[in-house]
Amino acid sequence: MKTVYTCFTTDVIHQGHRSLIRQARKYGEVTVGVLSDEAMVCFDRFPTISFPERVALAESLEGVDRVVVQNRILYDDIIRDLRPDYVIHGDNWCSGPMKAVRDNVEALLAAYGGRVVDVPYTYSEETMRTDRRMRERAAMPEYRRKRLRQLLKLRPAVKAIEVHSGLTGLIAEKTVIENGGVFDQFDAMWISSLCDSTAKGKPDIELVDMTSRLRTVDEVMEVTTKPIILDGDTGGLAEHFMYNVRTLERMGISAVIIEDKKGLKKNSLLGAQAEQTQEEIERFSEKIRAGKRAQLTDDFMIIARIESLILERGMEDALRRAEAFTQAGADGIMIHSRKRDPAEIFEFCGRFRARDGATPLVAVPSSYDAVTEEELAAHGVNLVIYANQLTRSAFPAMQRTAEEILRFHRAREADSRLMPLKDIITLIDQL
Ligand code: SPV
Ligand code: MG
Image 1 (cartoon, protein in one colour):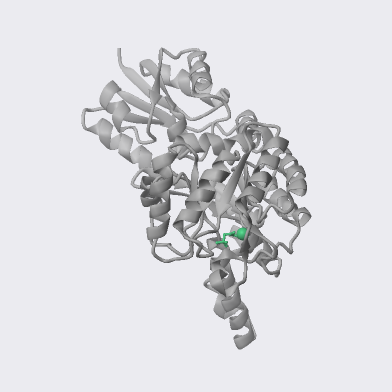
Image 2 (tube, helix red, strand yellow; image 1 turned 180 degrees about the vertical axis):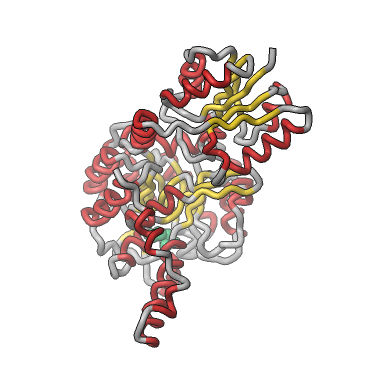
């Protein structure tokens, strides 16, 4: 009896899957691989049901002889272990980023005479509706909110990128690259106070109020499913912070990061040019405690951001604060630096990790941008935030276009650098 293998990356079974299994049966005994959570989150789908539930779904399908776990998007291990005669898949993997995976499977099978079978992908009303429903489920507050905590368990370092609008949200949501069969995408979105304020033409001094910040969050949420980390500035008064925690949780935001400054907050990257005062340890700890008391779910995270290195208060102060804020209930510690050399970040992480192996550490490599996520993860960082790069890349491009139109009294000279009209129209999903 010949053997056939196929891999499922779905939370919902529809007629497309049933038809694939029926076709697979014609070739031999059918084994279904269920992609592990770790592998699935690197891909463009986040599971909304657990791995055992996905296994049970595959097992319940008529015509399936065996279900196994597939731990990587590339099939190397599975093909080595099972040596199937055929690998069957919808023909949607014949183009786009999945083509690299298909090519890899084809080469692996060819080595011993196996064969890839591409079957026409089922684009029926039912499959498209089910697929859309599955994606939209991931956007619901109860799924989205807990996703950051889930990712922190699954990813060596969770990576977030700054977004400040529906459009930048779509970029964070949809940008996936394939590099040698390895897929990469952003895990989460950061709603930066700097970029949210800049998009509104305002300084980053807590002038854009919470109502307006939440409008931005809502705009992003409307068109995305990935988890959101809100830059909560100083968190304001503890009495107000408590109410805001409830609102953020209810909306489905995963985490708020508040920084230990007081008075008129200015952007950290201004450094010593701006006069800024750090909050006393006890008062800031009380704000964290107040927020944690107000919190209703176990999913939401309050992350404390330490500004001691920014304000040149020294490493000992930073470490003392990290310990106090963790004791007060902070679900994570963000350490910030404006040096180009990451030495002080590495020292902080090393010394913090020597005492605390569990509390998530957050880094924002805006100034020390030569450091890779892998290096940060090796020093114990769990969440890496690219805090302002989309804004900083868009602004010069727009300014150059404006200048060219003024110089030539027409748009033709700028056109070759512009996104084609057709592409911008199709960028947005139609319901
Ligand atoms: C932001 O993105 O608004 C931040 C990070 O708070 S920083 O700009 O580096 O202070
Ligand atoms: Mg900020």
